[in-house]
Image 1 (cartoon, helix red, strand yellow):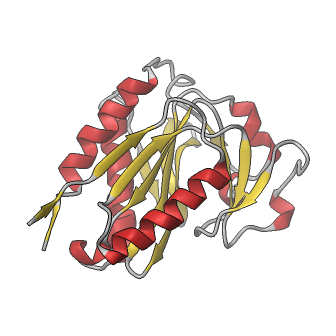
Image 2 (cartoon, helix red, strand yellow):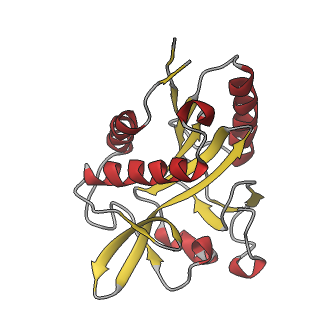
Image 3 (cartoon, rainbow, N blue to C red):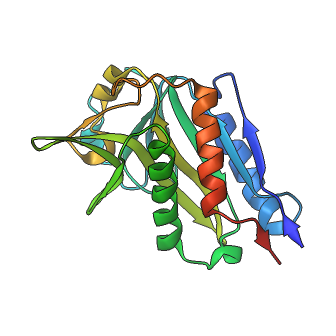
Length: 214
């Protein structure tokens, strides 16, 4: 019996506590078998989130935007308009129960999505997320990854910079990495709409995350 994944797309910014509440409830329902797996594409109002490894010294401007504890892995991350956040709630038991492989598949999802816009996204050893190499030693981060798994059900997910205000990242040391900057599709000279990015994400996702079967 197949279990189709539910896609939710929010056009208006979603407050962070509302997103957390939805994920908590959906994760419990997926585990109980009373709701389908879900991927939620959304934007947040400007805010910072603190992962479980966040160093308070990396919060450079604590009064700039609201700061929320996220409960996911990782350090400080910015979310805001122009950034597509994808919260991924999947039953990993149906997909091999391998968290490391799951994170790698999320990375591949972002890489294939960027490839649809002729952008070469790359992994870096020791650095979470997806990076763009400008040459000459300059690299910028274009997408972040932060996951949490409870009873083998995933939540939180990825964030892809489409056209956010890159200046908003200056209030934190993004993911604890100060030697590199951040970029976006629009910063690279590409101008896709958010629906076009959503379409690319959905297509690339289908190639990697097969519908689970009992």
